[in-house]
Amino acid sequence: MPDPLVDRVRARLVGGPGRPDQATVAALVRQESGGLLGDGDVLTAVRAAVDELSGAGVLEPLLRAPGTTDVLVVGPDQVWVDRGAGLERADVRFADDDAVRRLAVRLAGSAGRRLDDAAPWADVGLPDGTRLHAVLPPVSGSGTCLSLRVLRRARLGLPDLVAAGALPGRAPELLTALVRRRVAFLVTGGTGTGKTTLLSALLGTADPAERLLLCEDAAELDPAHPHVVRLLTRPANVEGVGAVDLRDLVRQALRMRPDRLVVGEVRGAEVVDLLAALNTGHDGGCGTLHVNRVVDVPARLEALGVAAGLDRAAVHSQAAAALSVVVHLRRTPAGRQVHELGLVRRAGDSAAGLVQVVPGWRSDGGPAPAAGELHDVLGTT
Image (cartoon, rainbow, N blue to C red):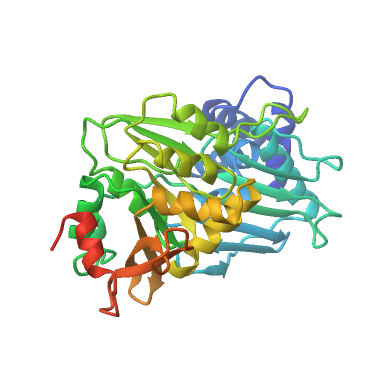
């Protein structure tokens, strides 16, 4: 669709009530084109106009494409897309940096957030579920930067993951026992290893009579379960008030009779409330934690807990009493896989020792010194 035609349609829609529908845009396209476009061209022009006026503009086709997880804009002629196999340069460009800035401001505004020289960055969920992060110059020295993450709810079940090769060997049996025995656990791994997908699949195997309370920043978990209650965080408004964080959600969830308390991603002070809850009769709680190696889990929990006001000994005591198993994923040449199930226990014989995660099962057949203890916890042989 020619840019002048887009500009004329935009000018006629400025100030109109609400989001323009396709019928309205189609009528304006026909009028502004002087009837020179055929039906096929009109349909193409309407889609381009709607994307430009109320979608993500030239980025919209990238966001709609199956498999897209991230779209990143570094400059008018530097657009990158991740379709699950790493970043690649997209054949898309903006007219100039002002065009990138206008898109960023409009997208932030559609979610009720301010983005201008006084508030030069925004991190917000868009109405369609996409996560937007934008930074304006001069804070961004390379021009307006956009980061768009496409959040698709994970609705795969364990059989789907088995078919995809994500659960090698005895992993399906052990993970099913993990949920059935109501063991408290964390799903861990690096970026893009499939933590949310696996957690959602595991929750789908929980007893249908259980009530699941999900606390998330964005609605990513989507377990195939009949009783799910979802709580979502909320950023502060333009006056800087009204924020609701994960710690608030965990506290509210505990008052809502949860059978399972689930934190989509443990990454802040909510770790204190989650560990406390798992120590006070809330069996079967779980969440995800970003770590690159399973042995790093205690250090990550310690860092989060100390930052939230607990001392080191208290963090390890809480973790030792609250958590039993860590399910670790990693990316392999064959795809994303469950690599290890680790047992959470004290180091040495001391009841006051630091927590460590000891391998109980490994997909590569490597050493698993806690295999016997893991089978005892899961009731497997």
